Length: 320
Ligand code: TXA
Ligand code: MG
Image (cartoon, rainbow, N blue to C red; front, side):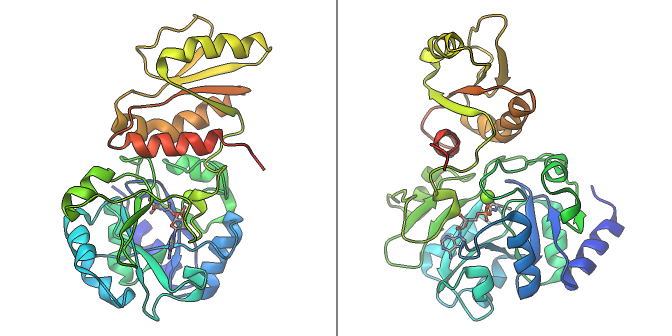
């Protein structure tokens, strides 16, 4: 656990316009006091993120929900009770507490209670909301360790709190409850099946909505290397084909996959939750080793496999 002085320091900084990187169970966040407009603008500047892309407000507990959201339908209460703290973000009509700087001028706000002792301790001491996107440069792979944050953002942040590697490994699942028809705007660390079970209905995944969700831009979560998707059974054939073109090829896939001896493997388990946990770290490792292209095996399309497939597809999308 983190030294109490570091927590105190983080809260002090956040009270005075500071930007602090902190661990959550999903990925590391780049946080600022959500009610401090200048501090929020610094977050956008550090990330290089367009100001129209709204941020998630992290709150200390479900009891704060009504101070940020002016209408909280029964479905939202059910989901919050069932999964907070946890990898679930709810999009709801905002109160005046959620400013234009945070929401990008939209009439809705995205809210979540993160499930990490460090993030929760900071939020409780601060007593307010923290606007925090993932602590990486816009469009790049999200960080799941403090080291990743330092590599990406280094001296640009006032403090990096190290809470160890993230246990979930992909961003939260975003559920839009701002209209009558609930929809998933981003599959993530909470399985879609779990959302549907609690709501007692099917909830469509609508990743290309009118709402500006940066994770829904085609190319996102992208490493330097190119990414080629494959079902595991075709992985070896894809590797041979790409090597035939003179490329340096690495493979993201399960240990059970038999590969030619001189091909580097970055072990991503076939089991979806395990794949989610290590995905971003493996993409970074493969990049650090200077591969031209990564052949990525798609996990099963259920549970967190849906989020992993989504991130891999975006990493593989044509780059602008
Ligand atoms: O797990 C997570 O959600 C992490 C950790 C740090 O909590 N945060 C994260 O933040 O992934 P970011 O900014 O990288 O992604 C937030 C997503 C964006 O795609 C943004 O567009 C969307 O949430 N979002 C924020 N406010 C919204 C709103 N009012 N309506 C629709 N989408 C919204
Ligand atoms: Mg992000």
